[in-house]
Each structure stands twice: as structure tokens, then as C-alpha cells.
Image 1 (cartoon, rainbow over the protein chains, first blue to last red):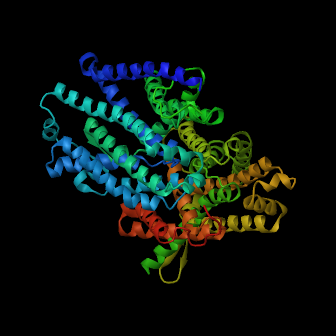
Image 2 (cartoon, rainbow over the protein chains, first blue to last red; image 1 turned 180 degrees about the vertical axis):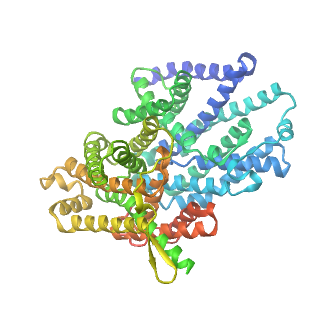
Image 3 (spheres, rainbow over the protein chains, first blue to last red; image 1 turned 60 degrees about the vertical axis):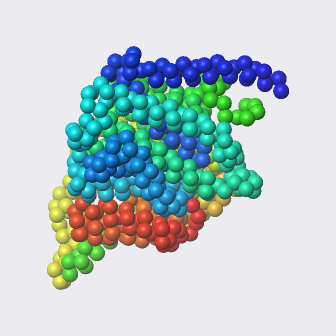
Length: 331
Length: 288
């Protein structure tokens, strides 16, 4: 075990890096401009979505092209609760996520009848069903969507600066929380189960892991947290339409490309992917269609060269692991 | 009588969906591989038809042959150069690569052809109809499409069960690992399967171009219809796929009859219902 002292010396560096980043992000409302703050909010929300998709696809092998179902459902339920139930916004948000999680039980039960690539397309059909149903609700604006009434928005905080602050800390909680929850989960016995399932399904079944159940619970949990993020995203946008809420490009293509280019099956990958995505986007404002073409080509390139993405390349160049999830040594 | 008419329309529409589905079903059958860009390739074929016939002024018959040839070549080369590299036990790379292709195709077509919706006119055929006794009328175009779909499926049936290539494809479907041991070239057989599937996709695209308006983002919903027809019919069954297409077509037309906004939703809901009641599909021959 000659590697043990080495990893022990590296660990504090990575912990310091994580700590400094969190402190900088936590203080963002005090140093960032309004534009930067908005960008950070969006990036943190994308980070939360990416971590959830990664948990699903990278660790349990459930590849979904339909997570926009949960982004949109979270958004719509949040709008409905905010407008009609009289619940305070900060309560309506988690309640919408909880309800989405409940709905994920029967939906997951149906989706789990399909496997592999068919599961992927099946989740997409389900997202389309959600979109078409949302367009039928005239109380929520039908096909043309609806805006959050101004008095409801003001109930969050009366001044615009204070509202920005509240929204930023929700985004901060979602982004950082998603990373921490996935990290803790992977270090728990769930993480061991994921690793075992990833390495060999028959073998993990034989040592008593109930694969289907583990996968199902992860599906439901990611649905609820994706819906939570979805609720926030449309709180920030203040307006929801069926096409925006259930957009496959926005909530599946971008998220999948972020995770895959950054590095699927690692916590660092989605973080790297989000940074890359927002950096590229700031350059690509006038690229039009070429922006998505570039992302698609990059994702295909990653699959051909190294399916573990950029993080794997960095790791092999000696960049230390930030979020250690292995118990003894790196394989 | 109105409902008989609706039923006939649904069945005819189902033929088109079976045509959409046949390529998807064939590729899954031989390679256990699902092409997420399937719908976008159908739309690509539609744009090729538009380019050849409307922009370049070729005779439609020449256009059809050219589209089928071009799509076949794209299919063969795409399988050899790109897809064969990512097929394997890991399901992520093929899903990701074809999903990436789907996004690239959609945005590429947007760049070249703009977002305007287009259509290939087939002249008098567009509005011609055949009157039947009892106030029934069948559009010539939907009928032609249904006949073409039947023809393509029958052609695939003959190819699969009465030719040497078909025997090779069936053998590959049963156990792809054995093909090289028997002196076959797996990469080549896979590419041939994709080539045939792409030829069917070409016909589907041409039908799409002649039947309705299409635009670069029309692919995903065609993929979903194709997928639903395959699952409803049961994996691996060619004629099951036709039945699946017909069920989907009837569901959509009946849905549209109830409320215009209900057409697509009704199709999806019937699909989900069948998935719950009979997940293996109506005529399953293999397991997913």
C-alpha cells in the first residue's frame, strides 16, 4: 500500500479547493454583478440537473432522454401551487418536488417495462405526454403558457435586489446540495451497491442487491430532485409554457452533453461539463445552429475516444480526484 | 358511416407508421441497436427528395431512385465508419452517438434548409380520391402510401426468408458472435442491415415529403411514432410492426375526431396502455 500516504497528502488540497469554491459561490451576491449572478444561478441549476442525470445514467445505467418530463412537471406544479393553493413560494417549491416524486412511482413502473435504448425513448414519450397534457390545462394558460402574477412574485421579497438574493441562494442550495448529496450517497452503502451493479449485474444480484429496487428508487429520487430544480428554473424565468417546460433540447440534450463531455460516472465530470458549457456558450452567442452541432460532435467524439470524458483525461494527467468515493484505493 | 371512414383513415395512416417503424425494427432485430436519429434520417430523406425534385427539377421517379441510393450509401458507410465502433455490451455509446447525430442532423438541416416547413407536391394525386358506396371516400395519396408500405414489408419478408442475404441476417440476429466463426464478416453484415434499413427510411421519408408539411425538427416525433409501432406490434415481428402502426394510426385518428388537440396524445396514451397491459407487444418474437 505505497499509494496510501500519497492520497493522504493530496486529500487536503482537494478539500481546500472545494471549500474555497463554496465560500466564493456563497459570497457571490456580494461580489458579482447582476448579470454574473444570473449566469451563476443558471449554471448552478444546470449543475443540479446534470448531477441527477449522471446519477441515473452514470451509476445505475438508466439512460433517460426524458428528464424534461420532471423539469416541466416541477415547473407546472410549482406554478399551480403558487397561484392557486396560497402556499408561500418557498414551501410550494419542495411540495411540487414531493408531488412529482409521488407521480414518478406509477410513471417509473410503466417506464421500467422497457430496457436499454427502449427505456430511453420510452421516457421521451412520457415527457411528450406530460407536455401535451400541460397544453390542455386552460387554467395554466394552455398551449401558450402563463406568467407568475406580480403579487405572487413580490411575496418572495418586495425589492428586486432581495428577490435576486433569495433566488440565488435557492440556486446555490440546489447546485451545491446536488453535488454533496450524490457524494454522500456514493460513499454510503448505496454507493457500494451502484458500483457492484455497474461492474456486474448478475454478481451483485447474487450478493443480495435488489437491482430493480435500487434502480427504481434512484429513478424516483432523481425525478423529485429534477422537479425541484425545474420549479426553481421557472420561478427564475417567471413564465412557463409547455414547449419551454418540456423542451428536449434544453433539459435533455444540453444536460446529456454536459455530463458526457465532462465525464459520465464521476462527480467532477458534470462540474467540468457545466463550466465548459457556460464558457463555450459565452463565445458561441452568434454561432446559431453551429453551437448545438459542435456540442453533438464533441459528445460523439467523447464516445469514440474515451467514454469517461474530459475528467478521465485530466485524471490520467495527474489532476487529483476532488471527491473521493472509493474506500481503499483507486482501481 | 362517419366512424367507418375514420377507421379507414386510421388504418391507412397506420401503413405510413409501419413504414417509419420498419427500418427501426430491422436494425434492432439484426444488431440489437436502436437508432435515436431514426426520425431525423426520415426527415433527411424528405429533404433529399425536395432537393432533387423541387429544387433541381428531376423527374420524381429519378428522385425516388436517387434518394434510396444516397440513403443506402449513407447507411452503409455510417455503420462501417461510425456505428460499428460503438456497438457492444455497453448501451451508452450507441445511444449517445445516435442522439448526438440526431441533434447534428436537426441543426444541420436547419442551417441548410431554414426552419420553414416544406412539402413536395405530387400534383393531382394530392387531392384525388376514390368514392366507395355509402358516402365513403378514400384519398388516393393515403391509399398509395398504404400500398407502398405493404409492398415494402412484403419485400423485406421475401428478402429475409427467401434469400441468402436474408439467411445471413437472420443468423446474425440469432447470434451475432457466431457470424465471424462461420466465415461471415460481422462489420459488413451489420452495414448491409443498416443499408437496407436506410433504403426503407428513404421510402418513408419520400412518403412523408409527399403527405405533409415537414421541417428540420419533425424527426423526433417520427422516431416516437416508429418506436411506438414497434413496441405495440412486438419486437422482431415484421407484420406485428404493421399491426402496431395500424393500432397507432387508428388511435390518433379517433383521438383527432374527439378533439383536434387530442390526436398525438391519444396515440401516446394507447401506446402506454398496451405497454402496461401487454409489455411484450401484440406479436412478440424476441425479448428486448
